[in-house]
Length: 260
View 1 (cartoon, rainbow, N blue to C red):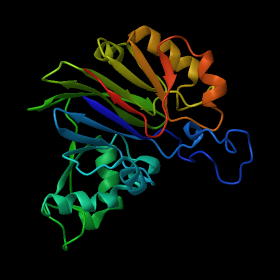
View 2 (cartoon, rainbow, N blue to C red; view 1 turned 30 degrees about the vertical axis):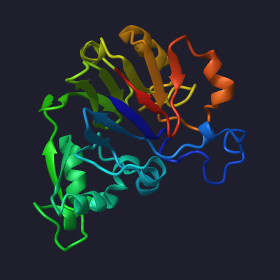
View 3 (cartoon, rainbow, N blue to C red; view 1 turned 90 degrees about the horizontal axis):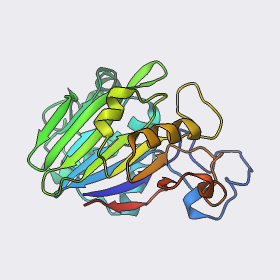
View 4 (spheres, rainbow, N blue to C red; view 1 turned 135 degrees about the vertical axis):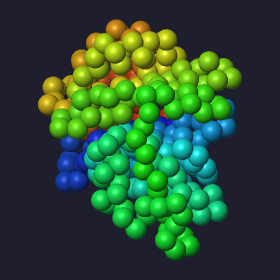
């Protein structure tokens, strides 16, 4: 299984507009964060999770040339606003629509934001085409299984995802944008080779886990490797990562993992 972190930042990105703090001025490339999304390849199946405002640039930077499945964790702008650029991947499917797996809220947002793209094929050549569908508890595919759970994030619920590759048994958990991870999603994630958790900033936040909360969840799940994502400009890689417990790190844009 291959995992590419296309973006690891918050809705404001880092550097932030009109901010002159040390992280926003940092020359460490790990401190330059576009909005959060991830690309997972299971036995050759390309799964894109979310499409941020910088989605087109993320695809170019990481040479993403194929998407077979698209999952929208929730309908907030920093996860949905780049979906129009999926039109290129519809072109590469000879005009075939992409199924958009999401929550009920996410499907409604897709229909509201992209009414011109809802259908079995593009309205015109070169347009995107989406077929929103509720994400099942287990999406069974020839290459493996993607299990889902719901995580609280303010007034909405977000899809938490657990990927299991059939050929290798590799297991990858992706829980972004959440305030809590209860016992059921923790149990679903146990046995994962790599876990990704929302770890917004050191200070508590009403709708996201802070670093200490994410560390507690990571240690309870017990994966060999955990990465924190959706990071604000309060996080400096060079300054803050050495303070994390063993096996827990901050993700960064362009990070690539091979999980076997």
